[in-house]
Image (tube, rainbow, N blue to C red; front, side, top):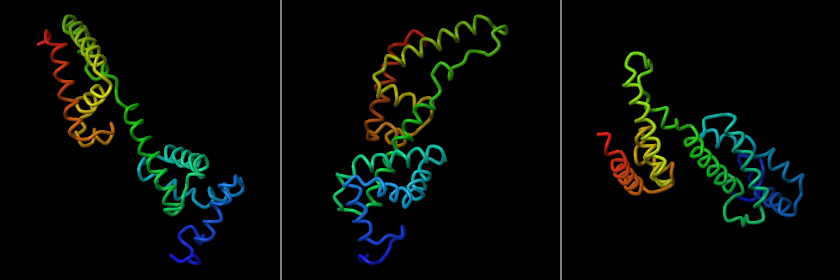
Length: 192
């Protein structure tokens, strides 16, 4: 694209270069122009990943904060929008990972004894004890193993999906799950 041809934002490359210079100089008006020009685009990028209006708005806002904070590091090897796009995507993906972990149902809620303890009190008591023992065993696992075990066993995610959430390779996810299962069997061996 030549310097005089405007892109999707309506700005020419020259306009963008001047905007970056003003941003680096600390011009607050330039930051307001930046937000006005790119707000919708960054929101749409975040929304495509998060599929939630409020989360996408938060991600876009966080992206602008990072752009403001780190504009001095922008070297112009890519377009300003490409740089902001990468920041937004990374924020949205990290938010998605955090939200997935927060939405996980606590282990104790997943394994339930009979809901009507009057039907068989000994079975209800045994179920509560098992739930507590499993919860305690899971809590002894190292963080990565606990995360992988929970995502695989309770959430039913594939190792490929787990790798994306936890930030490891698929092989590492499988290894963590294997070791977690082995430790759980050792800790709960008397329940067989």
